[in-house]
Length: 575
Image (spheres, rainbow, N blue to C red):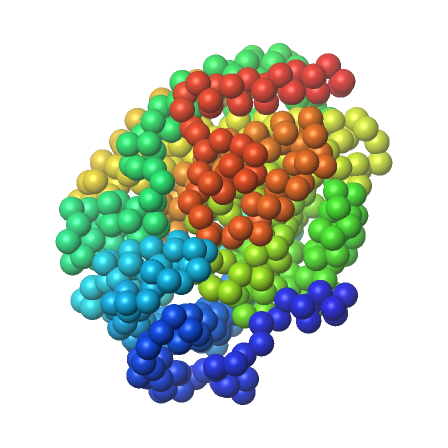
């Protein structure tokens, strides 16, 4: 196992191996040195690019570990202080010094002679330099700290279930119970706990919107949406394409989901479906239990990856044995899940809040797909080439969710449970596409209207949701919960506008899954070709390497969704 780790580790040739980052003064000499180097030919220019990338990898990983440790234990104030010290004291200076280096390389007469795989990185540098505004540096630092308040607030949310204190993730497991009254009780407890902090979260978002709007105006943009889409490097599609995506999902998804919900209501024998009836098995069977302990969870996950390809299992097992995972849910741990790439170690870190549900299986497969991306792109020389646009990163993770689904027998003892797990996954895809469209459109409208009151924000949210609903769920008596349901979406607070990528990539993942069912061997070759490319060509070109289209037109969306629905119908017949 150690050979995998040794091969991945990037060796330092520019930054001292003994560097301990406590202050800006310790790293300033490296920026000064890069600034002073004379770029006299293509050889010195390429060497300079590699030295700068090495420094970026060191700094990115330092920030990554501080972020990871803070999330793993939000109750340790020293960890929070460590993260805040980096973003408030070190990162602002790094941004200013980096801007000077951006200007240096962009005026270099030899950049046109760099290898073609550097072109995308140079485009990103040009984009970053054009957005830089020194007045924004302290505001961005304040934002990065303030955004973390969301995780702290949520990490303190617990409820009592059957006399035991549970995190909201742990409590949500009971929403799959066959006991309808228990589901209702747990839904009420979770909802009421979230409502306790609703006003705090309203105010937090208001403050974030105000700061983000100021950043946009300072940089010469009309609103933060236009600024952020530029910052995200949306070179291959526009905000109008996003609006078309919203419209395509609103037209194509609800009719299919309505049929599924009608079948659910009939199967359960209910007159109406309530919000606490959406996750229980439609046949009213006990919730699937794919694992009990974290050790069992990782063993089954490794076995699943091995059954796809042994290399994949080796990578996942190495991460676990080397301490690059934190999987269990516990009080004081921030909510959510993520894969954090570590550009110097070339060993990603998987973070999640496992509670023993089928959703945890989907999550580990998803984050495992991200991890594979890190391993397969480790050979790329520049950090910029390994820093992936989300449309590409999420294609890797969501494709692995669906590809792995054909191997989920490693988690269950019988084919009936595997069938139920697949149904859960595919039904979830249809539902999440609507949620993605709603959340993304909500963000567009939020930043088009930065002075909205809480009441106007609520009206906006409800109006957008109504376009995507089937109106099969009876929210009577719980309208106030529905009004603030967006507050559970971490992305709105911490990573604005990073969400539609899930929808775009989900469509690509469906196409990858269809391809895999028809030709598994060729699909894995295409998948790995896409992973190895990193971000060295355009998004449409990367999708083409995967053997699929970068396309979210209404006709294409409908074609893919109808395929999912046809597969669901086949699975229903197996029950």
